[in-house]
Each structure stands twice: as structure tokens, then as C-alpha cells.
Image (cartoon, rainbow, N blue to C red; front, side, top):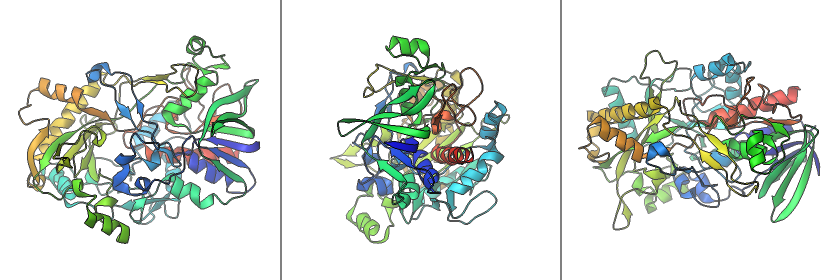
Length: 527
């Protein structure tokens, strides 16, 4: 099979590229997705996303034991279906701070500053509040206020104000500090993944072919040029050739893994795995960064939290009107706090859920088999200083790679999370939220010392599902792709996903990944 473009991975960026590259009708496009269609009902019911964890729709990765987190292995859910992780995430729409992108540009990535990327955020967006200087209207991705937000989520915002923090009605207008309600990628009470927003409306195009259950096992390289891909589908080995370019959109785990399996990466590591080196790029798999959240949880006085979201009444509301608790994205409200006044952007983000959310929901407290009502505040480290890596465990493409984030290997990261726990407790004590709160659950109220809080962080911290940086963009010796997202030293191959971020943005990463897909498509079509 021959196509002009081959896009690997139908996730947040891959669906964007499939749409934009096929739009003119001039180019044939093949989209390959390792997972299946997005047919599970839990994908489209917003509050049900955690029910997708550790199912056939989830790669269900796990890190190596983390020395600074009591040797725990942390669970990393990643979407394995059309839409990728945009079909399994909490739907929070955040762009990050302008200084994030200006920092990328200052490192030699020209045309990636805030003013350069803002048009692509706007191009992607249909902002239900209307178009403005900072927001787009008419784009594929629907950005909405929560349709039926919980009163306790609003009480959290009011408590933050009572604690002295500013209100923020729009975290995406270039100023992040303060607290407010999060906007979400939903439309009429349902998830608006990139599969729904970008891919499904254009599947009828004659020049676009989308294949599911198609796992790419190798990039085919000839004389430093990527000529196509090898993949397996339903037990059959297949190949496809690219007339123009291959774009790798596998995400921060799969993209470096596939590059290394194909001989593109650190030569010494490839040699250890018995893989022929096609291009020695020492940065492949390095520079891994992720956001960490430490949950601060309380029992709830009220019995109307999201623990009851699946009641018959709420189910009826959702099925009939697409309203009620099942439209919740769980992390409904939150905010950003700058600890160091000299910092270019906030170091802490907060996620509030009107429910328990402990270890991804797997360890929520129960009584007699029924979930208990609770509240969760998740202080989240967003200006990450620790760095990790992805490495192969073998040359078998079906083997999962070794994921080593080296969480809290930088002392500053630990201290930020400890301060975040203190702020979460301070907000919880304010009148607006205190009226809903019962006894503290984790950490318990008797944990007050610095040492006790450090122990809590080390034992009760989880990934917020934002791995980035493992195919970083740049012009330095550890860069994997150029500012045009072309893989250094290999013709006809680009990477377009969150792995290209030189430094992680200080907010949820889905919208930036979509922006990267938009910008990559524009660069390819202009070439």
C-alpha cells in the first residue's frame, strides 16, 4: 500500500493531522491506531472515565519502582483507542503559561513562542463563550463550561477566595494565577475527544484511510530516509509505504519506543538491545517529565457527592437530557498558585473533586461494598525539575518499555508538593467549604509536622497522566526533532505529540498536544 502521508497513532495530535492533511483531497493519508474504535459507552459519559482504566481501552503502563515515593510503581493510564488519551482523560482544557512557550523559543525553537502558538490554539477551538482575542470560534474542538457543575466545586472556589487567593474566570487568557471553575472539552454533556471532534466527521473522505487494531512495529528506514512502516493487524504482518512523510504521534511512551525499535536512539542502548543503529540520537527517551498530584481528602457531611453519580436518577437525567452528575469531569474546579514571586509561572495547580479520588479511584473508601462520600483536593506539581527516561526492555515491539520518571529526584519538587498540601488544608478550613467537610481522611488531622507531611507525599502521590518530553524539540545535541518537528538525521519522518515538549507546560497537557498537531499539519502542508 502506498500513501502520501502515514500518521501513527490516532490520539490527541494524530486525529488532528489525519483531518488537516486530508482536507484538500490532494493527499492520500493512512492513519494507524493500535487500539480499537471508541465504542465503549464509558468513553462518552464524562464522569465514567476512570472505569476505562486497566481495560482494553488503556495501555495501562506502570513505572519502575520510585525510590523517592516509597519504591511504589505508579500507574500510568494511556488511551488505546481512537482519540487516544483524549478519550480517557478528565477533559480539562488548559493551555499552560505564555512563559512556557516563550521558554521553548528562547532555547532555539523559533516560531514556538506564545504569540506563535496562540493562533493554533484558536484554530482548534470552538469556545462556547464566544470568540475573543484569546479564544477561537468555529474550530473542531468544543470547549465548554461544565453543564451541571457541583455546588461543592463552587464552594471550593469560594473557599480559595476566603483564603486570600484571587478569582480567575479564564485560565487560558494568558494569566493563570487564582481559582475558578475549569472549562472542559465536552459538547452537549458528552466528551469531545479528538476522535469525535476531528476524525469521525471526515472518515468519509476517499483519501483518508483509518485502521484500528494496527500496531506499528517498525519504521522502515533506507539510507537515512523513512520510507514507510511495518505493522501488525489482527495477527497479520503488513507494510505501508509513504510517498512524502511519516508522522509519529504515539505519545511520550510509544513514540520514543518505536524510534528505538527502528534503530533511532542512543547507539549504546540500541547495541545492548541487539538493534542495528540507523541514527545515533542520544536524546531519544530522555528528558521525561510528568506532573504529580498528592491527594488531600476528607469525608463529606453531605450524601450528594459524585459517589452517587451512577444512581438511577442521575442515569435517567443523563440518558434523557445529558445533565446531572454523569456530565462531571470529576476535577471540576481548581486553580494556580505561585510560591516564588520571581517564578515566571505558578509552580502549583489544584484540582478539586466532589468525591474521593485515591490512587486513580481504585482505593476509594467503601462501607458494606458501597462507596463513601468524600471530597478531594489535589495539589499538583506543574513546574517539574526532576527528569527521567524511557528505555527498551527488549527488541520485541510488544514488550512494554521501562518507564523511569525519577519522581522527586530534585528536592524542590518535594517541597512544592508539601507546600501544596498545606495550602489545600488552609482552603479546606475556610467557611464556604468547611460546611461540607467532615473528618479528614488522608492525611489524617494529627499529621502536622513537616516530616509527617513529607511522609504523606511520599506515600500518597500519583501521576496526573501528563508524560512529556521524550523526543524533545531543539537544536542542542540531546534534541530529537527540529523546530519543524523533523527527526534529526532522518528524512521523511516527524514526531508530533507531547513528547516534543522541551519542558513540560505547567498545566494539563491535552490542549497543547492538540495545538502541536495543528502546527505540525500547517508546517507540513506549507513545505
